[in-house]
Structure formats: C-alpha cells, structure tokens
Length: 499
Image (cartoon, rainbow, N blue to C red; front, top):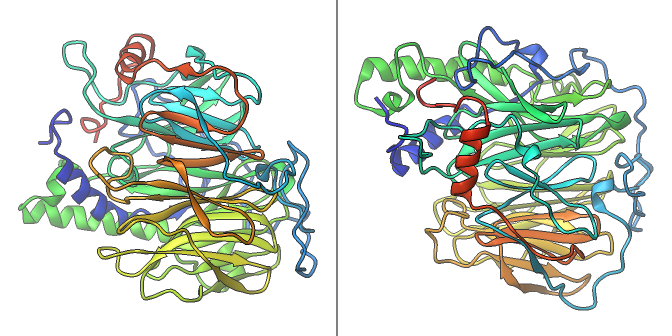
C-alpha cells in the first residue's frame, strides 16, 4: 500500500520511466468515451467532454497550400489574428512586428513567488500560475491576484489534521482564454509530470469543472492547444494507464510476480489503445483534425511535441529514440530525418511561424551521457542545422522562441532536476541577435514564453519580463494558497487513494 504523504522520490522516478513507455498521444474524448467516473475525480465530477467535430475522417476544406518558400522572412500577423494563413504570415503568438534588438534585453521581476509557471495559449494570451492561482498578463498593467480564477480547482491530495500535504503541485493550462481553457493537475517537478494520473478540468461560467476523460483502463488529458483551421484549437492527448483491479500502482514495481504480470498486461492494453487512436484532436471549433494515418498511408509514430498554423499545417516530433519530424499539409504528410543527429535525438520545442519558417530545438547523444543541444530551421523544403546555445554540461536545450524582429531566446535545463532545487548547475537563459553569437542573459530560468514581442521567464523566485507591467506583485505563498483551496474548493482529490 502506498502512502501518498510519504511516497519517496525514487518511486516517482521509477514510475515515470515505466509509464513513459505507455504515455502515447491520441484523439479527443469523443472517440474514447468515459465508462465511469475517473479515479481522480471528486464524487461530484461529471463526465463532461469538449464540444468538437473531430470524429470525421475528412480534411479541412478551408485550408490552402502555401506558396513556394522564399528567402524573405514572413511578415507579422495582426495581434489577435488566428495564426498563419499559409502565405508566409506567422501566427498571432509571434507578436507584433518589432526591430531586432541592438543589445541583450533586460528582464525585471514582476511577480515574486515560489516557482511560477508560464502558459501561452492558442489565442496569444499568456497566463502564469503558482499552484492553483492563475494570473492573466495584460500589457501595461500590473499582475493581479484574483481568487476567482482558481474557483473550482480542488487540492489534489487529502490533508492531515487540516494541514495540506507537503507536495509541490502545479497546473498545466492550455486552450483559449477565457472560454476554452483546460487545466490538468500534476505533481513533482518537470519533466517528471507523467508520474501520477492527472485530473482534468474545463473552465466554464467563470469556474473550473472536473472532466471525466478516459475509461476503465486509462485516463487522458489535453496538452499544447495550438491555433488551427478557422480559429479552432488543435491539441495532443496524452494517455495514462490505470492499475488493474486490486493492485496499487506502486505494487506494479514491487517483487510480486502475479501483480507485476497484471500491470504489464494493463500497460500493454493501454498502449494498444493509444497507438490505434488518432494523435491530434480539435478541442474547440468545427474543422476536423488531420487524419495522419490516411495522409501517411501507415499508422503514425507516437508524437512528443507539435505546433500548428491556421493554414492547416502541423509540425510534430515523434517519440522515437531518434526523433523525426512529421510535416503535415492540408493534402499530405511526410516524415523527415533531421541532419547531424546521433542515434538518440529528443525534440523539446517546436515553433512554427509560417509554413516556410519553423524552428525545432532538442538534444542528441545518449540520454544518460553528455547531451548536445541541437537547433534546426525548416524553410518549407529542407531542414538546416543552426548554431545552438552552449548549454552547460549535462543540461539540455529545453525551450526556444523567436521574436518577429529575428532575435532568438533559448533555455537550457537539467532534465531530471529542472526547477527542483537539487541541482547546482546553472540554467541560463540565452539570447541571440540576428547573425550574432549566443549571449547568456543575467538570469537563470525554468520556463520561457513570449507575449507579443516581449520575453517572459520564470525561476524559483518569480516571473521576469522586459514587457512594461507596472509594480511588482508579491504572490500569496504556496502554503497559504493550499490552505485557501482546502477551505474554498471542492472535496480534496486523493489521487493515490482513488487509483
């Protein structure tokens, strides 16, 4: 029996390694309906699902093929537009046009609080969160702590004597603000965010409502909402297996052969479900997501990361040992090997600004040895490797952003200890002006995002930006937020008990 209050870190790491083999990506909820309450949902959880039209195998009728790629950079989309049209116009998330910087940008702290996270949404909105508290970035205005923005979010583990368990819990938030937002709760530090089954929520009528996503053998949740055809939102769905009846997940890794065999059979069953499901789903809007099997002619490999454009173009990285790039147009799909990589290549970030302007960041070589950062650019026809920032030894290139003026910003992290306080290695934020070398900025960070033409980053002490935002906000502490959620929110979610 696993005690959720004292579960050791090593068990989480072991569980992550086992689950990651099964943690494929798939389709929206309408193709895998719930067959009962999910284990992590509160007793009042309803089997709500997103409304979308992604049950049809056809391709979007409104998408157009891009013009032939040229050497010229695409022009910026108007703020608030719904991503690239296919003619070389970048998505709204690229921000308003701005000239390249003459000197490294200076980021100042605008939110003081423990380990905030950044959440760029499909419509260009940027959210921050600290535990359950969400903050909305509004240009020129100071951040505001609004308790209404955490309404409906329960504390994810039961308390002891009225005191919250000492777990670091956070949110993933994706979608479009404020009417198409999904949130899922995870424990532990990134990237070990798959180690526990995630409860999911949808924001409706000003509060979050629980979703029952999954079935008897598994659950799933949405990640990485991206702008897609006709203003729709395209998302990846990640699967997580549930343990077989009468078995706790921790027992799947203990010396009990009958229970281990049951777990292995369950994991294999969920993997079959995941690999036979469409990996991309429209979670908001009427167009249909791409049918990758029809476009490729074979079932697609499991996908790790992706980005999409309003033209119907999708760029995704596979989960293979040596990752490939899947390039999807409105009429076909092709798999591309990236140049210069060794037998092992993991893609961490994809930024599609136009069909002929795509950047991919990742790392090659043995994952348990020194990692070499890799950066690629796609011009609509070929992939070219670019100089990557010089990450510290054993660190990985984790995030990459490109400002419209041509500046690049990138982030290196320690992949097994990122944002966890155990590593002494620096996690520098890097900046590069067009045609210049990479320069380390005077800040170490754990997450990175853009808001229009401005850079945002977070670390263990707060959130930083070069965007004018007004006075710094001192956030309520995580401990106090946990107590507030226990008093204000629904019944606490005892995740392990409900497995």
